[in-house]
Image (tube, rainbow, N blue to C red; front, top):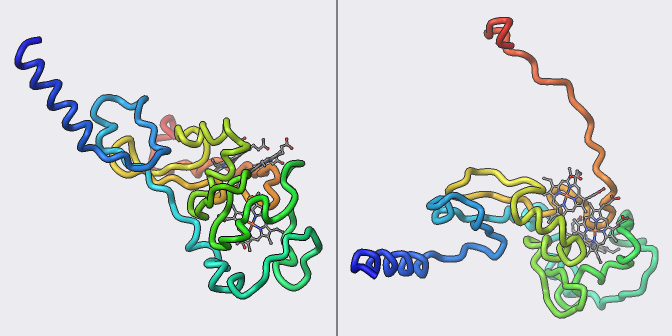
Amino acid sequence: MCSRCVALVVLVVALGCARETPHPISNTDALPDGAAADRVIELVARTPYLATYPCGAQCHDERVPDPTRRELVTFHAARRIAHGPAIHWCDDCHSITEPDHLVSLDGQNAISFDHSDELCGQCHGERHADWSEGMHGLSTGGWRGTVRRRTCTACHDPHAPEHIQLEALAPPRLDPRLAPEAR
Ligand code: HEC
Ligand code: HEC
Ligand code: HEC
């Protein structure tokens, strides 16, 4: 190998090592050369939108957990679980021991409310894979720099995720300043 090639290889390896992996969902393989270097995928946090969070400090630290399936009358009375045949009760998703966290199906891993996609991805693997590639859901930003990605619950109610019915809206108003043939 010529000395210039060696220098190039060393440079590439050094740059590669210096680059931090921003988040495991980042998929940069499909991007043009160079674009991947500046790309950081940031999940938009959910917890600021959850009125009852932190669940522990606000309530559950003081309460003895009761995982019995029952009609809830005092708190969360309006909560309805209608989510396929595999999900039956709160503790399928919410951790009993760590009320500020969700929990994996095998009960082994606490999952942050800000990363609920990890919960959903256990069953909706294909959608999760599409979402990780930016093909499902919503990401804002460009090919370079910071991409802000919404997690599943920004759009789907985890408790009763009935099919989203989108209403067709009227087309945008045509710009009257344009020549008629360009409108
Ligand atoms: C399929 C998984 C799943 C099940 C089952 C589930 N939850 Fe949740 N829950 C979530 C996720 C995920 C969030 C975070 C929602 C978000 O990011 O907007 C959440 C948020 C909440 C919140 C706070 C936000 C809100 O919507 O008010 C409450 C309260 C709650 N759940 C109560 C319950 C109760 C009570 C049950 C059982 C009757 C239950 N959940 C069952 C997944 C689940
Ligand atoms: C334990 C497995 C499991 C987990 C975890 C799970 N789901 Fe589901 N989900 C299902 C099943 C099963 C269905 C029903 C599929 C059907 O009826 O065809 C479903 C249905 C759905 C639907 C379609 C509803 C409809 O009526 O078309 C959406 C949207 C959805 N889930 C989103 C989510 C989101 C968001 C999360 C994470 C908060 C999640 N799911 C977590 C198993 C799961
Ligand atoms: C920006 C909003 C948005 C986000 C974020 C989002 N979805 Fe969706 N999702 C939709 C819309 C709209 C549909 C219906 C159109 C379609 O099928 O693509 C849908 C459809 C689905 C369906 C099929 C429902 C059906 O009735 O067939 C599943 C399952 C699903 N999403 C799961 C997920 C999961 C899991 C995530 C996170 C990894 C996620 N979604 C993130 C908007 C979103």
